[in-house]
Image 1 (cartoon, helix red, strand yellow):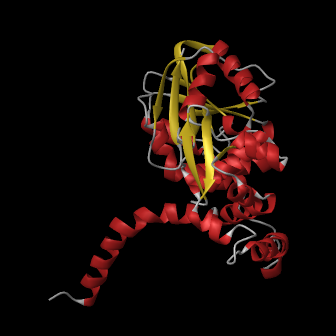
Image 2 (cartoon, rainbow, N blue to C red):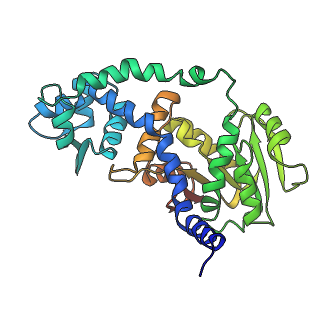
Image 3 (cartoon, rainbow, N blue to C red):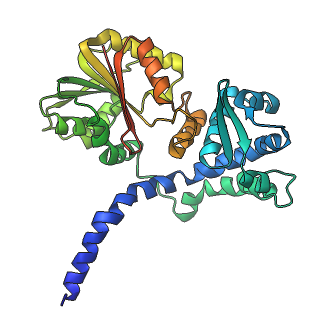
Length: 337
């Protein structure tokens, strides 16, 4: 007969073997909750659902953008995110993607529907949403304690080993992690490939904090290089890691950086891109569509499909381009010189 301690042990084993596996996904889902709301609010406010209800058939993103007076690239990302949220459907034709309302949006998100929730959503968007921005101050007025570098290292503690292990990187012994920040990915790299050295190339202030708080002094296989890799020279290396870098920038800026890396790269070397990848058919993943919308308001870049990243790499001179989906939040693309 099992005693209370034995029963507790069994329960703990079951939790660690099953429930723990879902925790990261639950956290990411909660983290993105406000992005979901604002995408729905924005599509309603711009009149996307009303236009598609009135149209005789599905419309392209360019047509929708033209009729609603918005930017073409911004509208395309908004529509793709709505597809991921099941608020819109998409059909791929030879001319491109064509969008239509789902039953849910026709029923609840168009102004003319008897069951329309449009005015309620606009109240949440313009009043409640803004008030909740100050929730932390309402609860406590302490300065925010968790900084970006801690958050990034937390991400790599979950996803880092998957992207670094997506390809065999053992032939690359001299590695530069451009924008390596707190060094979470660099530490995963030397853990998997003990014969390699990794140099974190980042801005001077970032390097100083990484040295003081994140990378232990005894870890001699991780070194640092202070500078701006867009403006300053990039040293020769076997492999360059660009993790969550290219999605910040427009295509021309990405091309500038990749061409610069290709020139510095040793023959036979390569570049490893770590990004969250969009599906080629515009259907998701939802998290990536949400992040692409976030890039629209925070930076000048966007999330991309494997084909789009491969095109950038090829244009910069890289060959033998391989893509690996990890099943986690971030994926890996390797290009060789």
